[in-house]
Length: 529
Image (cartoon, rainbow, N blue to C red; front, side, top):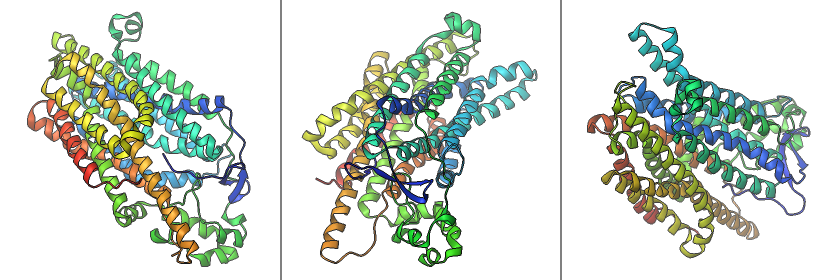
């Protein structure tokens, strides 16, 4: 995760709160219960993500979306996210709500997630009751379902940033580490529970008969879990509102305090190499507001692209390896339940809903959910195993092993698609998931630590160049590779499936990309001792 540094004893953080734009306040130690309450947001988010991963492709196919277009749904949300992420992040940093900076955005995005799920899980049933004309119903059903998927993905992708920023705003360095640990723990639990509930055959249970279909059952549980988890999360730790501003800040303090993010990291545009804030503005008493506006405007897509192009080569290679890994992982995960339903069980999602072929396909989707549950549980377990393995094989060994096991596992699933081996090899998904969430960020932290030591040595020798890299910039660049991978998967897999005429090409593609990634992480990524 982020390499957040802090002093022992007294824990302070840079806050956009009561003391002005860049005030520093002492933070108390947070009880474990409060951190657990805060982490429940990750439980609810990952639960809904698991439901989407299990059901969204079957939903899109069952409403009649053409096979050549269904992967395009995954393309719209990451494009919006890639373009709007800097804007939303900057708006969150400067929000002046009395409820705090982060919680209004968390609440808004949570509501958007709930609305998106309502549309893609209930749109078909609702429109069937409202529209009688088959052609008109088909058009509206596809449109509403696609809108729901895009809305949910957009909100679920964005909400992670404000949740993490909320944690960093209200916690000391030690509590941040504890909070991130609980976040990872509840992320695994939420995903596992979501996949388990998705694997249950609700059509033959009383609740399924009462609510109508399994899609309505899953919406009921998703809405319940999401609402409860976010209600607890929003009440977990008080958040100080942003009362002060640049207009209330003395000129000397504005000049001495560069614009910082909530976790103490330099914001986009605050680093010399990535765009300077004009110091003359800080010396002009009547223009402090312009300083804040300039800082906010610097955090744009143009700034992000400039960072990507100007970063040191070893950062760029790490970003490319992360892109390769997520492209392989998402290629498999986004279509896995559909693969199990069509290839492993030989079902047909395009058949009539009361036909034997469609029922067999639904059974395959349920078994695919169990496979994704195995992935989620094993990811949590492997995260703990990594701590022991790293002392023996190092980060390079962990990185290479994660890509290799995933590449071999998906390859064997594609070549020998049977139920037992598919479920067993789902453990390789968990290895890859844990690897992608931990190893790249550990490498980023080591790069930063190395650069900080170099800066200290240069300062002692009187040879400092006055420039510093922003940790937030590098972590943001790494995180953006996930959305870029979604764009590549959404734009490419639909064409591949349509050309091959079979969804089996999905797992073969994932395996090939992962094995290419093995070579890349071994040859190009730089590892620090």
